[in-house]
Length: 247
Image 1: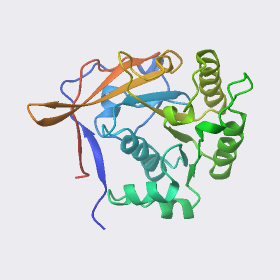
Image 2: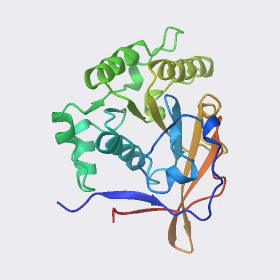
Image 3: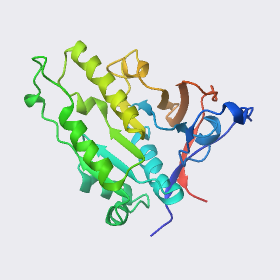
Image 4: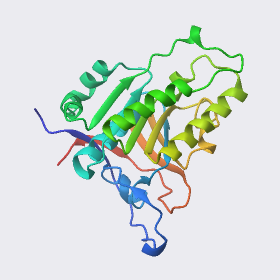
């Protein structure tokens, strides 16, 4: 099998180092360049929101975060998908060199697909995420996960138009993840005039990363930007991520 492919983010300039005495707890992303512009990685034990349009690399970045965590930092992970089934996801990323089956066999990774039916969503006010919490908690405890990915929020809240319920459940989700002490990535689709379709997730997450996939003169260009990072300095420019084989 060819060597794995990774997202490599070109660093454009040096950033000043924070005083170690006041260093915010970080979890290395395992993505070349990204740990530099975030000065250490994602906020440890807290949720990070990665948003962007289709094809910008959200799932790939998230999967690399889990796999690097397992192979380089001995931190097992859980990938919970609300769109792709586990076999489809494994097949898709295998072409990039990621062997999910082997990591699952070693009980270092759990991949779970949660099927969401819009017709079954009840908006009477009783709608909540208790079932998800139970299922996610089981997955975390099974592999002793330190890293979690939820992909994507839109599928999780498919068909839910009650904004009050949606806001309440989003806050519960982020708080629950914090209480579990896992470093989490939640992906979301880019909204119209807002970072996400719901337009509110960025206010309840500790770190927000925007991935952009634009076409200029018939040439596709990807960009990454750290929108916010509570409690930490970070690079504020746009950075060009490259999907390439690990050197």
